[in-house]
Length: 124
View 1 (spheres, rainbow, N blue to C red):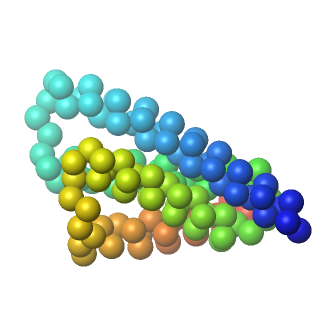
View 2: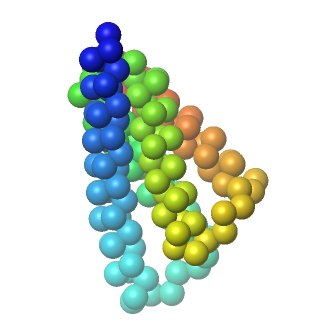
């Protein structure tokens, strides 16, 4: 049982890493688009939210398919790790460390999406 837990953590970290690869690719594409067109703050915010959710979904599906167990918990674990790293990078890059209503709502949405994608990936 202990070896299975350690494997779950490692696979969750691999899922987070794969999620970040998706994030970087999507943000690079968005940066190229932004250099040629004017994009509103609403569109940017929506794109960042969708990028985060897609990355969490991909990372969770990868991790759950690799462990083939506890989809709900692995999805939450991948989501928490992903969001922690995003938050630390955000604060280091100069954004406010204050956690307001908007960040809490995004956090809860990401947790729900991570858990749901874990359940779906486990049952596929």
